[in-house]
Image (cartoon, rainbow, N blue to C red; front, side, top):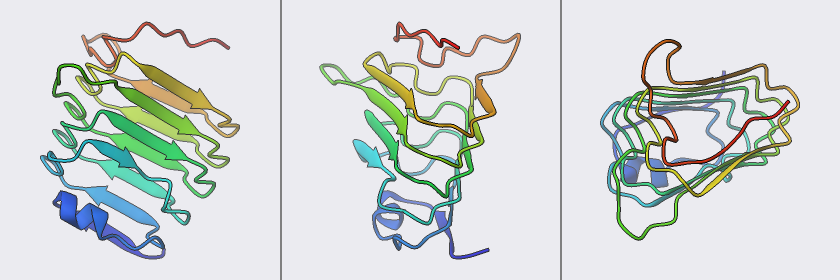
Length: 146
């Protein structure tokens, strides 16, 4: 497996090599940045974000990562409300992405752009927990159509 990085802080994240293939963000990390774009990691295959992380981020983007196969986001991440902020969530043009899992209470305030486009290998989209209140994207008015 190629280069792997464990991230504990926003500084760790911004200093990652573009050749990183696996990123693991530890729980309760990176809670001081606003925009998060993984598109520079062209070799990325696996991304896991722990619980309670990236809570001040209002823009989440993964675009053109054709090696990415698995995305896991823990509970209560991307969840701090900020007034007068436009929120956006997009995962676009990821040819090998098989699975997206988003934990409960994550992306609660994301009511702006919600985009999942050109993900031909996607087999699993799990948002929250079945049978439990999840509140993921609860500020959004989106539909998933087949």
